[in-house]
Image 1 (cartoon, helix red, strand yellow):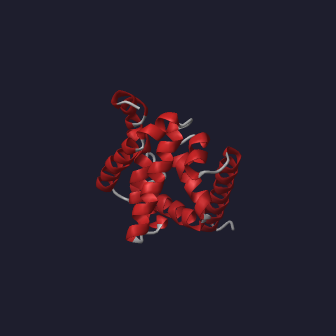
Image 2 (cartoon, rainbow, N blue to C red):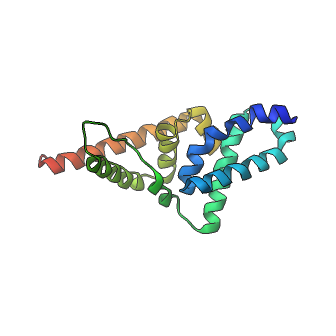
Image 3 (spheres, helix red, strand yellow):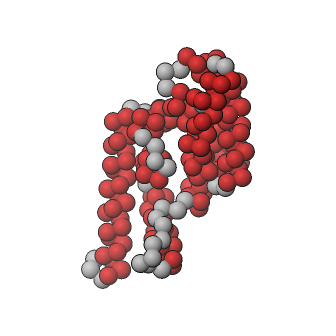
Length: 171
């Protein structure tokens, strides 16, 4: 793979993987440094990458594995990366305090999910990855990724329903 091909096929994906890397590492400066390191790793593997059938999936997998390595070295748990996660955004109809409370509730619910369900849910619904990309990154089947997202959504919905019914005195 020549420099121009690498720039167009691989380096152009750095903005695409940035949200996942920032979420996993917990800060923007760490994510920017990580993106540079990931691109260097991919540049060093450019001959293998040229023959790979799913370059986008390989880039996502490399980024995810790099972040997991960094987290393991620092002994930081994936749950700690939820601190940088903002699930819902405020609108004009609600106060910021209500949205902060809802974000807090959802983060606590996410902590209750099994690791793989949580990871697939965040990659799909918050980071916006396609099922094909998630399956490639996590090395699972596409159907399994769909099932994991479905189960996570159902659990989150049921738990939110219970929480709000309890707060209204209906539970």
